[in-house]
Image 1 (cartoon, rainbow, N blue to C red):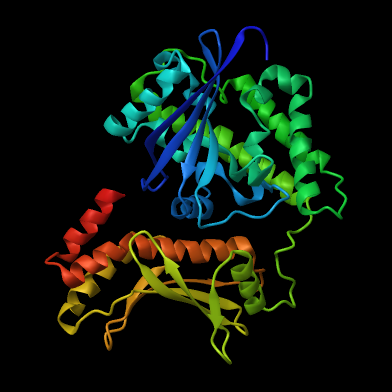
Image 2: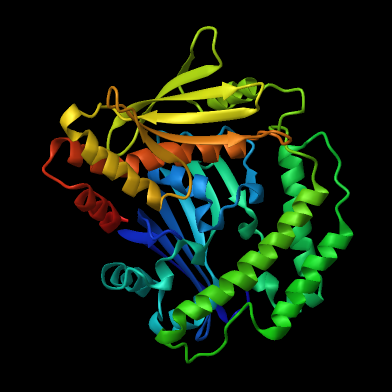
Amino acid sequence: MSDFETLDIHIIKSNLTFLDPQKVPLNLQILELTLTRQEDEVLECRLTLQVSPEIYQRIDVDSLFNLNPEFRIPFPQKTLALDRNIVLQVSLQPDLFPELAANVAYVDELGGFLEHLSQNEPSNPFLFTENWLGLSVTQGVEPDIYGYRSIWAYIKPSDMSEEALKNGQMTEVMNQFIEEQVKTNFANLSFGGNSEIQSEVLDFMKQLVGKGSIYQTDQSFKKSNKQKKSQSSRFDFQSEITGLIKQLIDTGLPQEEEVDSPSSQLFEILVEFFQQDNWDFAQTEGETVLRTMFQGENGQWSCYAWVLEERKRMAFYSICPVNVPEERKQYLAELITRCNYCLLMGNFEMDFLDGEIRFKTSIDVNGDRLTFALLRQLIYTNVLTMDRYLPAIMAVIYGDVSPQQAIAEIEQRI
């Protein structure tokens, strides 16, 4: 760091509400703020956040804060425990640096600036998860820290300057990430890299730097243009470079060990996933069915996973903890119809005979492979959706609340 750069760290405990791409709020606690400046220019802005296990499951499943599964390097120690708080470190997307510099002179002003936005401008781009790059997810304290780092911990803003591209610094950064990923996950395998794809990534980044599309240097950053610039940055910096780096990783690395071979049984992979993900479960005797329980923020309920081995299909169900009484079934039928209309993945179902409500997610892997990443999406999308809509179901069953009102209240929380 040169004599003209300053790095300031501020310890703080304050709550901040982010919005994911579906405008669902995430309430996180700030633990530490870090601001790197050079005179009036912001070079980097980092937040260290405390995340509850439930919220981290959402971050993990939906790859929030740009934490794509393929961009993670786990520490060699044990895996994350999903019954304790997690520390998440994130870095602000560079296109928001000019506005940050215009509003924040010192690091101790940063917390107040973000709190003000959270309370008064909840839809401000500074609060969008996609405008922050997840650097690391950890638990424990030195020297016993475990979790993972992401590619964004390697590709810092300064690494993508025109000078860094010319002197080969970006190449070194990408090689370091790939080599560490192989060293950590595939210790017994050699890696030769893919120079053609790597050159394509670097050439594309040079074009972006030449056009000025990675960094916005216009100091007259107008409020009316915030969303437009944010979307442009996400397209250039995030979508394009992320896609190319993913191609580099997919081409240069061997297949993940967690992917099944053509002869593997889906049920075996499911059991292994539950074991590695620390779920308590039981197998239904003589059937390819696993039963378990899930504790959400709004209740506890039973779940089961059902594998149809010959058809290469699997379904996961969350069972509502109460059955619908006869006199409320029509209201619940309307409610779950309204719920399903809003959902992209999975659906609610109701048995008109006994009033059981369940939420189903399913997958068909005919001609493909089942991975832990697919199972994680399938299962956690399921339980988090049930947890989100459970208050509405209970309100219509037990309260004097119409289906329309119940859905409106859920959407208000979102």
